[in-house]
Image (cartoon, rainbow, N blue to C red; front, top):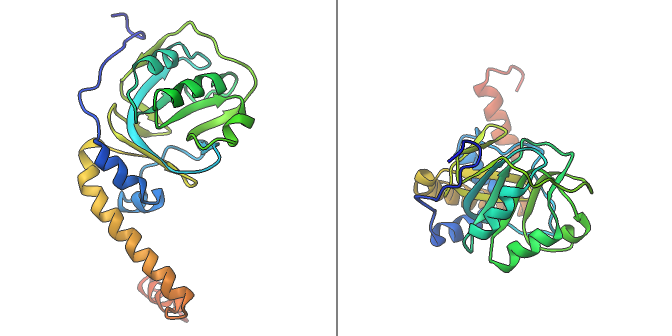
Length: 225
């Protein structure tokens, strides 16, 4: 198979229970327990009406401005998949719009991530189908290739392997590697529960933020605390 036109299968894929568990957690809490070292970049923003994104990654690597392999991905993806497209962050041409996203909804795809541009933003922002992208333009794509399916990709330094867990919400996008989901979930759940309790105590007047601020300043050697 010619390099640049590889179409591969996945050898692993996060299971539905894992997806359901992570869908209930804020992306920020998952990021915190992953040492805040991983992110899909500030340019990938949710454009849909609202709601979380969670599912196994179906990866696509394509030439900027070309969506040939995105069409192929829609013929291969399984229900629940998140189609993640590395298009180099180029914003000159939109890779998907209402028609392709409608196709994705019809086949049960959980969401679409485009490291590039989309169009038909009016339709996207009025629907709950999760769409994350780096920009918007009316200019359509080309369909010439090259492109590859189910290969490792990187979005602003965040490496995504086929079958990894992709999650997203209003704070942005995050990949949890397949082999780390079992380790990360209980830590993120505990983090979320602790923060929920802290917020409730703060609103009830039972927590003085000055205490932990002063303690942190003392630990850092700040004088006059």
